[in-house]
Image (tube, rainbow, N blue to C red; front, side, top):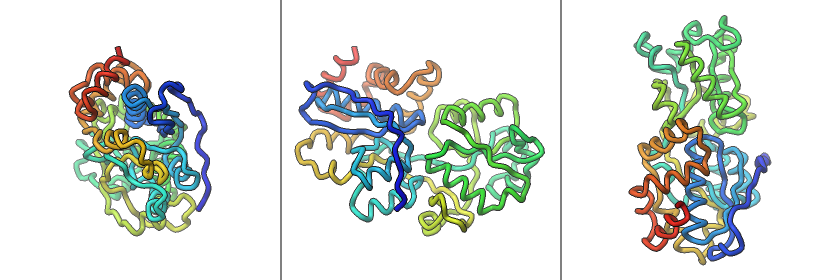
Length: 328
C-alpha cells in the first residue's frame, strides 16, 4: 500500500492531571463540521473523562492510511468511508481500523453541485452527463472559454474522486478544465464569489454544510458502482477510471485496532458510541461558526454552552456537570 504522511501540526491538549483515561490522539480535518466535531470531542473527553487529548491536523486519506499503517492517530470523530475508498476498505478488512460510533447520523452527500439559479433556469440539467454537455454554462474563473470543475484541496478523498471522474469523462477534450483549490477556505471562497456574481459553476462539495444553507445548490446525480469505486475511482494513480459517482454514505467515528482493544475506558467508548449528531444540529453550529468566523475550539465551547439539549444526552449527569463547569 502506498505510504502517506499526515500534516503534522499536532497540538497537545490537557495536562498530566487529566490522566484518568490516559492519552488519546484525535484527527482534526480541515472542513468546518469535522473540525467542530473533533474539538467538541476533545472538550468533553478532557473535562468530562479526564483524558489527555492530542489533536493531530491532517487530511482524510493520509490520516486513515497512517491509522492503518502506524496505529496513529487513535480516532477520527467524523469520517466518510466511501470518500476514503480502498484505504479504509483495506484497513477494515485487515482488522486494523473500524467504526466505533456514529458521526453524523443521517450521513453525508458528496457530489458535483451546481447553483440553484442555474438549475432553475435549465430544469433539464439533473445529471452529471447533462451538465458536462454544456461547458458554456459553467465558465472557468481563469478562462471563460472553457467550463470549470472546481475541486477541493489535495489530500481530500473527494478530490481524488473528482479527478478520476473528470478523467473518466474525458472532460479535457470536451471544453472543460479542473479548477484546483489550495484549501477548504479557498474552495468556499471560489463558490461564494461565483454565486454572488450569479456565475454558473460545477463544484465538488458535500452536505451538510453552512455554505449550502446560505447558497442553495443542486447535487447532480450519476450511477454508483461499488466495485469500480474501490478498484479505481478512489485510487489516485489508477490509470483507467470509468464514470462513477458517490453514493450517500454514513459519517462514522473511526478508531484504530489498538484503541478498540482498550479495556480500561468503557465510559469513553460508551460516549463515542452514543454521541452522533443530526444534520440539523451540525448545521446550526456551522452557521454560528460562519457568522462569527469561529474556529473549532470556539465552536466547541459555544456548543457546550448553547446546545446542552444535544450533548447532555450523550453523557452521565456527573460528566455533564464537569463539562458545563469547564465551559463557564
